[in-house]
Length: 92
Image 1 (cartoon, rainbow, N blue to C red):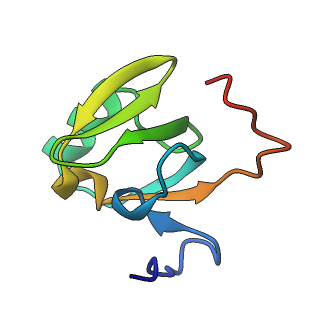
Image 2: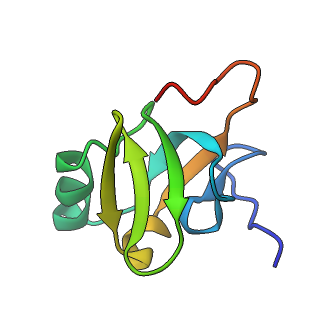
């Protein structure tokens, strides 16, 4: 399946299709108030670097060096841009 291209950025994809073990930067969160607050409480907001550790439901992410579980439904509302491995080593 090809990751969807969005208007947020030519390289932005939804978090639920980010390849495993790839560092990414959150570009935009398309969520309602409750979901937005939930994601922000977990540290998932614009400008944040994260990494997808494990697929499933919940998906396991690394944010701030901590592993978090996020539902696929919420992950689909987060648009990210994968980092270049040269400019973003896995020192999350």
